[in-house]
Length: 393
Image (cartoon, rainbow, N blue to C red; front, side, top):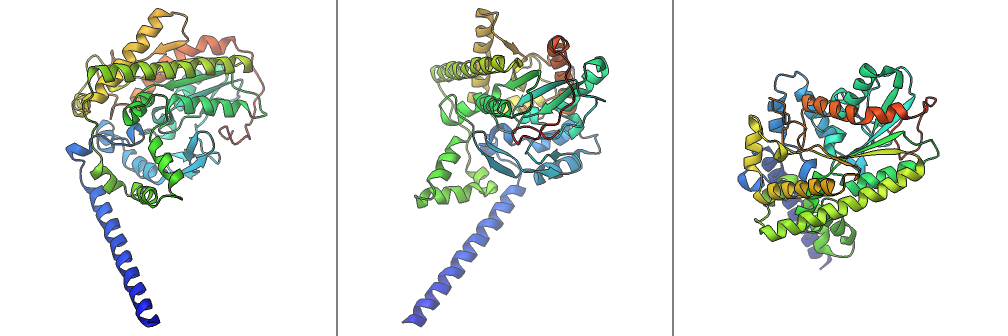
């Protein structure tokens, strides 16, 4: 009896092993296949860039291939309380993540006299951009070129997938550190909030919140545990993902209004906290390809291939943001939706991520919006941040 039981267990173990091996093989094969129509909607949202189009935008750049190799290797994230995740430390040719989990920004200044913190999602983090081509790096270079006497050091707090509430929490954690705070904090948010609403149908939540619910419950429910395991098979997950069904106009309007209400509440709370800490703030509604009056080249295909409800929701939400700014001119918010309307070239390689040329154009606008504030700030001695809630150095 014991021999038969052991033999049965051995056979069962072999079957499980073969099944898992087949799943892994199928997953890798599916990853290699081009995206199908049903896979155009990536459940990971802006955190999952369109690499094929990114390569096309910077096809003449010799670094682009190695960049995406670095990006793939740097995808691992670690758990961080309150904000959920940050990248694990990484050192590559074009991507560096410091010991605290923040994207490194190569400095362009001789001496730090003023400090600027940049918050946001993957666009601000620099998806598709080398260390020197991120928004933070290019903004610091502009300060070094146009106003070197200010000594502005830019530190990048952004992370892929973050919504405005995560940016606010990252700011709050940074203020809790013993070192002095920044002179100015810039928040580049908005489209990730909209995408999170599209995912769940509820405004004000992080992206992929259902994953956290499933992971939390996985220790008690076998079904949730299986879901967590399948979530780590991106090929199969992509095959199973589907674009959201078209929503009615009333639903889109409701989602847009709720998203704006949640976003503005977070903005006001952050402003109050910053004022108490003596930090100036600049809140910017991030541009998307859907905002361009005349999308250029491949950008037209991006718009055409995007799920209708997503396009409608992004545009409806921005319309209400513009209405809020118009109704209350003192609202501390600047819309950047038309930031690229005067450019004749493509800058987006998916609905939200920018080429380095696009980041440069955006950095020019951020410089013009922030330089007066930075000029009014009192210079301070150079400092080194050692607190884990801030970038290293």
